[in-house]
Structures are given as structure tokens and as C-alpha cells.
Length: 314
Ligand code: APR
Image (tube, rainbow, N blue to C red):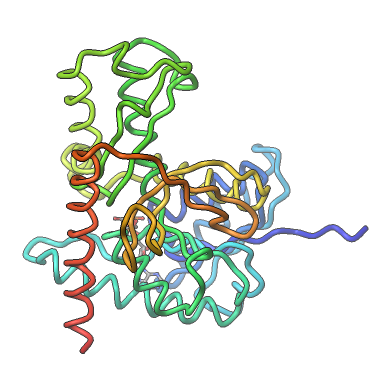
């Protein structure tokens, strides 16, 4: 039987993109093509990663390029291209600049990989998934935002540290937008199957929830230049693994909702089954009135960003 090599393209060879490329190749998941607008950057990082392959014991091909033709035939395309917020740049400026970048890179990439699955990482995440949906013309099943996997990993890490238990035994459930409006659900978060509220006081849970919401900002404040990339790259790797190996993992991801949770036509983070065809099923759970209200607030903030994008392009 011929061997079918799998291929992942990572757009943006910055911190998140290069680290995601490393994680994907070193896990033996796929050959990786890294592309960026800056000449030499993707080539240099790809060469460096390829030179580590003998030591990391993998045979994945890693290529760096500035030419979309080299991305052809990708199974998964990870979009990390974008600008970081500069001093003096408003949130709306950043939104519109990154939306322009995401639209442009997605349009080019999907010409060469029309059957691919897109994983969007660029922030503001939920709005960038909308931009990628429009630019690709792909169905919602194949345009997925990476947010909830990262937010739940942060929440799991904080719970594990606080309780002094292995994070392998901690499972965390988050809904909603990425960042401030994220909706963690402690009653659906467990330690070896035990609901978190049985093990931790409500005030402590609330502190960890708040730390999770501002997890990205906490790292920006420490790094001073740049934002988090190790955990975001690991989150991407887990999504790629679930897709390429058809694991059907239940992961929180940002996806366009068609009436689920009472939301229609907006991208929001929800638990879903991720397999070979992308989003296989959105999982709906019953929410308390407070949780539902928090989710609606989260969806409302995504709607505000979409209106800003549409008004600017009108
Ligand atoms: N085409 C390809 N690459 C681009 C383009 C473009 N049009 N515009 C910018 N890039 C590249 C930059 O050249 C840079 O190498 O995107 C890369 C972004 O890398 P970093 O600045 O290091 O940013 P990073 O930390 O990787 O974050 C990327 O992920 O988590 C989000 O908020 C984060 O939106 C940001 C994105």
C-alpha cells in the first residue's frame, strides 16, 4: 500500500507558528510547511527544526517558504499570521488589520488546499474565524478556532497546582469567547470524575476562573514583549492530532453556531467532537440562567466585533 504522508501548513512563522510546527513535527503527526511574509524567517526556522529531527527521532519533512504553491495539498492549515497590538493601536485597528491579514492568507492558502481544515489562532479569535469563513467559503465544519483548548488547559493547570494533583486527572469545561468573556463551568469541571465544587471553596474557584480569564494578559505582563506561545502551540497540536488521527476528541473550540445554545450565525466557543472531517458534532449541555446569561454576553461581544468588521468593509 502506498504510504500517504500527511501535511500541515502553518501560516505565520512567529512564536506561535514556529512552536506549533515544532510540536506537530516532533509528535510525528505530519510533514509541516511554514509560510510567512518575511523572507528567510520561515526558511530559517524550518531548517533549524529539520536539523533537530535526527535528535528528536522523527522523519517529518519541514519546509519554510514565502510561496503558497509550496503549501499545496495540505490536510490542515493553521493560521497564526497577524500583528501584535502596538502602542497607540486601538482594539478596532488591530481587529481590522488582522482581519485583512487573515482574509488574504486564507484566500491564497485554500486555492492550493481546497479540501483542508482550517484552524484559526490569530486574535481576536472569534472574529478571525468569521473572517476565515468568509474568505474560504468553507462550511463551518472546516473552519475552527483555537481558544477553548488553551483556556481549559490554563484552568486545568491552575486547578492541579492548587490541589496538588496531577493535571492528567483534571478535566475543565469552558464555553464562550476567548479571553475576558470566557465562561468556565466549574460544575462540569472535575478531578478524577469528582466535580470541582466538592473539592474547592467557591471563592477559590472564582479566583482560579478569573486567573484563567486573564491568563493571556498575565503572560503578556511578564514577557513585556510578545504573548503566550508554548501553551497555544500545544493546543494547536492537540487539535491537529484529533483531526489527522480521527480521534473524535471532545474539545472546546470556536465554531459558527446554527442555533445551538440559542445562538445563530455567530462564532462562539463550545464543546464539540473533532475528527477527520473537522467538527463532527456540537455538544449542547443544559445551562443555568446565570451561565446562559454569561454565554449571551460573550456572544454579544463577538457580534460587536463582527459589526465593526462589516462596517469597515461596507
Ligand atoms: N502572511 C504571512 N505571515 C504574516 C502576514 C501575512 N500577511 N502578516 C504577518 N505575518 C506573520 C509575521 O511576519 C510574524 O512572523 O505572522 C507572524 C506572527 O508572529 P508573532 O508576531 O511572533 O506573533 P505570535 O506570538 O506567533 O502570535 C500570532 O496568535 O495567539 C495569537 O494573539 C496572537 O494573533 C496573534 C497570533
